[in-house]
Length: 354
Length: 109
Image (cartoon, rainbow over all chains, first blue to last red; front, top):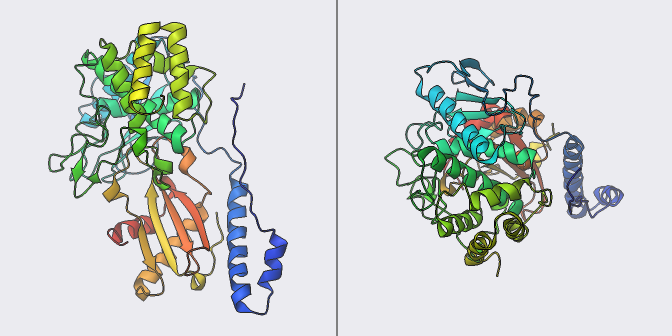
């Protein structure tokens, strides 16, 4: 059943026939703005008509799905082109290829599958054994990694600012979690729901890393993407969940813009309304809850975050407060008072709940 | 796909690259090219990039999510910045002329 939404369509305020009349006005000071507005209106209408198409690829059918508990990985090599998926470089069960990017992608896809299966009994991204497909060596000196709705893609980095994007296990966990979110709450990628989307990816990326390393919440570094930057850059990582805003400060990158508290929330049109900026706030809430509870973060706080993500009461346009409130409800229903109190304190500490 | 306005009506072209795994301020600075003062060569580069980007235009790429990057192009048509045509082009579909324009104008504000 579709989840409820409060979205409303945007409509123009000046009827086209009024603009037509203005455009025919003898005075150029009146007619030119109308001509320009009509031009714009025509362009944007054409684009809106295209917007009815699905914005992202659908998940591929799981015809090659493996039995529960077993991943089905396929790592491809784009050979520095942008053609996807590229040539198959390592299929499930095959020995190491000798190419570090291929073998890191294979291992880290496996680590991500392992967290979701071992801890949450989730059989791959869609819960039904969807094959985990990745492509490495995408583009030339390409400095990004992304999930395109059907597979993961990794660039090699430029070697000056960025290393290869397969280097960090939590980045692969982050990208695959985008796929999990797509099949669960489907959080919008804009403003606060977008920042929650990004934060959940950082949370489960961090949990993939901690589970692989066998670390407790208090032993973990809580850095996202450690190792991605070359040594010449003054950066610890892309983001810090423990201390948002402190991950980097370098002339080539600028300063880490993440806030750690709602009083510093960035109201910006950039970055889809600050999805990678304001995610610092829920990131720190998770860090505070997990370290207060101690033990492995994938239990306790991690279980509550996962159950909340999969809870049908989570709307796709949820803001921070709605998500936070639902974590408290879920914690009370399934975890007990101690976990609920730790989570309530964490959300209060970052200014989301009072 | 978008039908471009006549370039003679455009005063300024703003180009930004959005999305990606992180928001890195110094690597995300928008490029701004003033068509009334730029050299004929730059004007031609802008024209070439826009002409090849237009068939790939979509209304809004942001919702694609998943850290996919895209270019946002804005053509400003009057001095008070009130009239503009804008569209997005997914990075995966971006013509090389647009990518070159982005790289060539790093630092231009």
